[in-house]
Amino acid sequence: MELALAAGIAVPRTRRTAALAAAGFFVGVFPANVQMALDWRDRPAPQKAAAYGRLPLQLPLVLWARSVAKNGEGRS
Image (cartoon, rainbow, N blue to C red; front, side):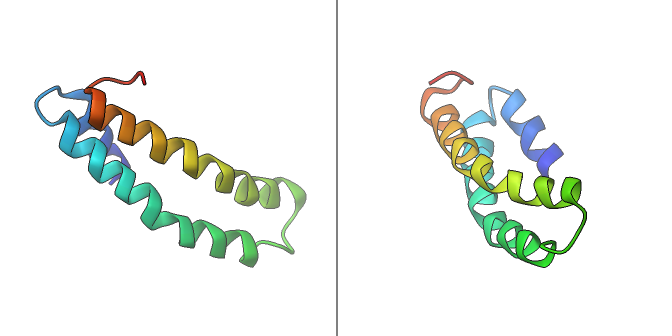
């Protein structure tokens, strides 16, 4: 799914739709990332760090995707 969205964003004709879909995807996977962080509480530190490290990245990704959809490019 992520590769398909990336390909859609790379093509100017499908950029807006793919960026909106990407924003929705990032919002949609956030609960799964929270669950993963909770499930991995007892894992070794590197795995735990990766699980927790994903959480704060979701908001910038959503904002970036919305910006791409609005502006038609990767800069806001």
